Image (cartoon, rainbow, N blue to C red; front, side, top):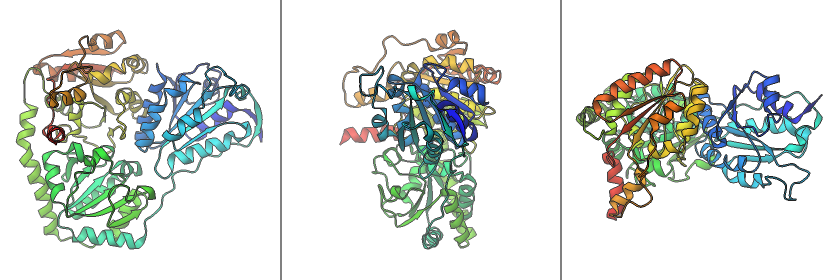
Length: 561
């Protein structure tokens, strides 16, 4: 046993857990920051706004598959964390927020920045706790890492009252928390799933974020190849399979392209791995092949049958479950496999004319697919796609207009789709994977919510490229007004930001693009700047309300009804 203060014990725990970075904004560096810098090699990443800390930790957690750590302050410093922690729990990512809370001695008496933070955080986290006994800090930290990582990962919130922070107590040496517990599914369910896959004529593998977090990419590729089974992903599952691979057919639900939708509609077996099959993944559960059997694999028993009742359910880790299915899978006829692979390729070839026409469209105003093609070509492999949320940037969800070329190289938002998290999260992505290129497509609406952190990226020498798809509006919302034949009220920006100029003012490269013949040179210049540790922003004037045909079809159907 050794006498320690709370922050000394917290710093020791973070160090023992292998933490690289803590993202945050200190109200007073004596709370945690000094102990981190004086006692550990952990770097404190100063952001301009507390909400940005969660965005960075979210991306870090996705790419490193371990908790991203956030530090913040009482009252409003806590409330600004709520959206990001909600997104982390929705997206099944482990983020641990540690905050300096209101003093214990005055709690309930109108203390400065008083807030019942635990009650606020319970709905958006897996566990929320306020420290009342200093000696319990090692247990709380150990428990926080175990809860964040195990089962369906998610966010954890720890509040340390300010007046307890300097109190020293006898504490045992910290023991790292229980790492991820992995379980295998029931053997009978494995056998049934393997038999169903072998019997299917048009099977389909649908992977969600649970498959990615499990590290199941190699098993997914092997299963697809052994069966001749196409791979679709939910937004959270993107990056599980290279999108130039022979069985890639894009994403599901709102994000179908024609090739994937045609196979989906005719599938006789859906194998879902690590997905809750939420609204956006299924167009609010309207898209489901009528005659398909359903095999659901998930580590969380509560997810099984949450939306669609499976014919066969496997509760277990995605990687272990798929490995067991592979071991139980009978040989698949080589001619059947070849026929399915040829059928997938035929669907892709059928879509190619539309793809090539979009890639070479030199219209003015610029159309988004022309920009996506340039980034995909010039940035190439080893490029992480950091996803944002909005109408124009949604084009990058539509494979093959943008292709994630390597396993793990995508950071999506969860079902909350909180705007600006992708733009800011790109900083966390670059710190997590410094050898990767990072690109984020964003609308001008989301970009205006994020401008303060351009300086943070420059300060950290994060080579990131943001491509602002600028239509002077909250385009998705405005598109609904267009379809409803309503006036554009409260959706357009009569005075819009000069993003390129703002980027330059914050020590980033800023480029404005207004014609298609300027795109390639701008992307190449951004890539060169990134290689030198300089963030880049390309402001592209795009055609308003030019969306993918499937996006338009889904939205028009809502108004037709």
